[in-house]
View 1 (cartoon, rainbow over the protein chains, first blue to last red):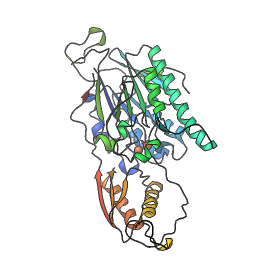
View 2: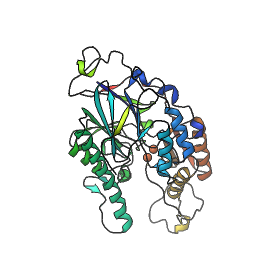
View 3: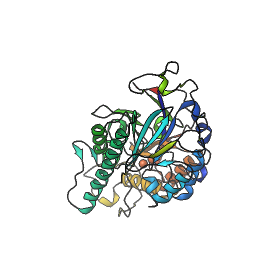
View 4: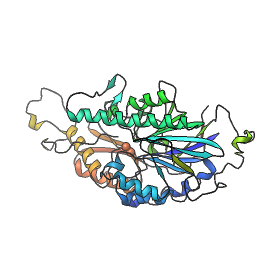
Amino acid sequence: MIRVAAVGDIHLGPDSRGLLRPAFDTLPDHADLLLLAGDLTRHGIPEEAQVVADEVAGLPVPVIAVLGNHDHHSERPEDVTDVLRAAGVTVLEGEGTVVDVDGVRVGVAGTKGFGGGFAGRSGSEFGEPEMKAFVRHTRGLADGLRRALDGLAADGCAVRIALTHFSPVPDTLVGEPLEIYPFLGSYLLAEAMDESGADLAVHGHAHLGTEHGITSGGVRVRNVAQPVIRRAFAVYGLPVNGFHDSGTAGPATYGSRAHGSATDRPGTSGPATDRPATGGS
Amino acid sequence: MATEPDNGSAVDDDVGVGTDTGPGTGAAHSAPNTEYRIAHLGEQLARGDLAELGMRIEARGDTVHITGTASTAHDREAILRIVAEELPGVRVRADIALADVSAPDHSEELS
Ligand SMILES: [Fe+2]
Ligand SMILES: [Fe+2]
């Protein structure tokens, strides 16, 4: 069993410094990796990113993130990314990364994603340049996600997770006003996941939404926006190749999960991720 | 919420309390405009230091109802202050929860 911790929309700023660290310090007891589903800052400035970086720096589990719309607000996503990377966070956009969890290759493919709406109720690449650019942005990011997931499959990942900020499905938006669904996600993200395959999809962005959903291809979707999960993070246990390891009878090649902790791994000062699985965009 | 609000709405801010009374009330200028003021409040919350886009703000009868989750008590006070500034004279009912940042006590096992 791979244990995935995830949270999005923590929206940290200088006055929320230290808010999440006590809970994050318990991560080794709960999880093998931590996913951050975007909107980590309020305005997307380096000072806020530094608060996020300090919150996760030195954690003994790999930390993998995508940015959200708030992290783009100041139009300095590269600076935000640099600050997070300096603290050991793997920041994905149209890329995948592989984490080795006791011999199991766990792949995470990430993109911010964008809006546009859901099948039958979505915007089209038509008309004014602004409208075309809107839909093209989503399509480009969904294509990046697809390539990243394909790359992880080619790379022999036993478990693949799609990490986005915007939602791939309407299910997890329930609680938000219907009228704004097109600003909250796009079916193009779900289509990419269904075509390339994924064992779990994790997103944020919809603060008033619902935790549970599923794509039409059967990929489980979880909205981990912090106001939705009402905890510092949620934890999902994923079977490896359908095998449920309760910690007592894991196959030898996967190692024992009896310790239930990632702290016995070498290189605890940073993520155990190795490299991007695909070129991505 | 994801909607980045527009800038520069040209709505007249006549003082008026209460929800829209519907068509047939005649003079546009004297029509109550809580609806637009709610929209402006949403803009103010998003634009300011809070960058708050996660509040649901809705008229319910003669009351404006605000629901959502704030990161800290300080943020919640700041939100309520902006609400008071933007909607003077309007009855407001706010149910703003504080974010729970405790570690989870359970996990979900997916098969
Ligand atoms: Fe958010
Ligand atoms: Fe967002």
